[in-house]
Length: 88
Image 1 (cartoon, rainbow, N blue to C red):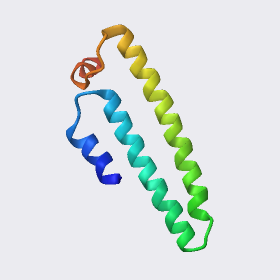
Image 2: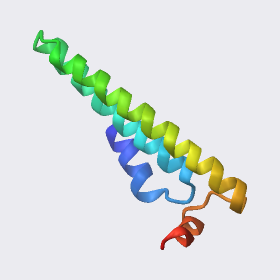
Image 3: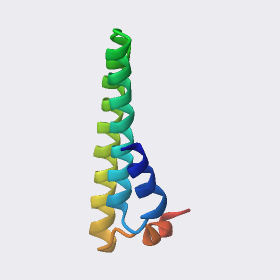
């Protein structure tokens, strides 16, 4: 699952929505590893840390989608090439 997210982030950079979904896939695969190793070691620290990562992922998704909506309203496109215009 991590590899699929990494390939989506590295090779499919046409659309900003695909990049955001790939980052979420990376976060979820890391969370799955935390929970699995936490159950394997019979310890709750991995599961607690997984909740913190989920919180950060939810904030990242909300802010990223809000920026994407604002950019789409202004430019009518969500291509990564057109986002480079915003550099100052």
